[in-house]
Image (tube, rainbow, N blue to C red; front, side, top):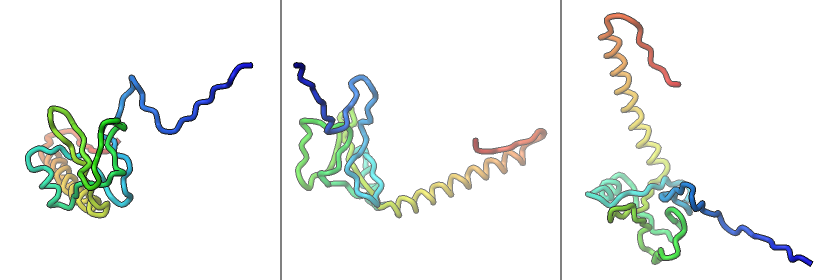
Length: 133
């Protein structure tokens, strides 16, 4: 009599030869927007000034699970991003992120409208139309 083998999948498998999202953040708290910030220059301090905070939650993980990647309680969540640079997980309240994004979008829209207006004024012949596909 043959024994029947059963396989139980307990967690998500990573592909060996597929692509991986090494900066994927899991264990996020709702109501916040998360990002990995390279520790270069004064980038982290700049983001702290506009409302970001360094994440120290042990439930938050970056990329694939790693066997030898211990994190002490209360220490920043970080990941090596290459060439000796560390990336720290930072977050900002969703409402603040949305406010900042709306301001940035308004600025971009104003610049685009100015470029279109200038192009129409300088056109000697033909027709200029700008649209979104």
